[in-house]
Image 1 (spheres, rainbow, N blue to C red):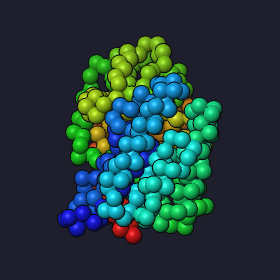
Image 2 (image 1 turned 120 degrees about the vertical axis):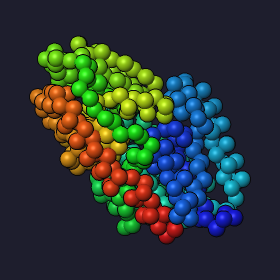
Image 3 (image 1 turned 90 degrees about the horizontal axis):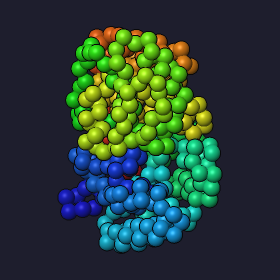
Image 4 (image 1 turned 90 degrees about the vertical axis):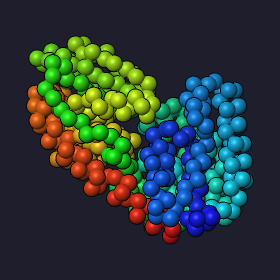
Length: 358
């Protein structure tokens, strides 16, 4: 316990503070959990900027970056001492096959385990490196889930798998603080802005809807712009593409400009475990999304956007939304209400606090 009487919780993950899972599943909750008597000590493996350095480095540089990150995390744990009797582990802690960091975080603490992706799938199943299996993530997931007093899953698909290791599993979706975004007001203009926010790992899913985007641009009476944040777009004839590196400020600016949010996904075991976060973010900002019918996507956007299967349905959804700013406004308002009711921190903080308190 800290001096104010709050329950102190170590919140650790293999990411850095600004990476999506750490930001959404841990950092977003930190300020408001204090009102519920829970203080999160955020202990990411990497410092800000180190994740990108690590991904782009050669083997020797990778080893050097990781060794320094591991030493810093262990030092932070030692400095924390026994003040925090609970550990909240998101995904896993170490980037090596070793369980040493996981054991250091969990030692003498009650463990709550959280994951928002099917990270036990590796290599080509996820679009990642074929040698990804050597990281031993599936073994880490099992080790953590079996030892946890409680497991938190981002959706029902993940919960079903994790329930094979632990009877105490609660679904808490990935959350969006809609208060952080101004509500988009839609006007009919000479140009329609399609938006996509993600990362280099999810950008390739756009390739599947290129035919629909090109047909849409060809038959549209307006200019068509694709605003990309966090990834590189494929070549799309007739579409003006603006690409930006992700940052919190760039993301907010993009959500103030987007007319229609895009979330294409291939249908694979990996994508079925995703939490539809892009679509939820569009909805929080009052933007109607168009999504592929994969995993929980259709349920997430129900009544607030369009679910498309195949190029023809994508084209129809884009054409309908682009031609009716009033419809975009109505769906945007419905989406924002849905986020407030079902996907906001305010809705789920009491549940998370109760789990952490045991």
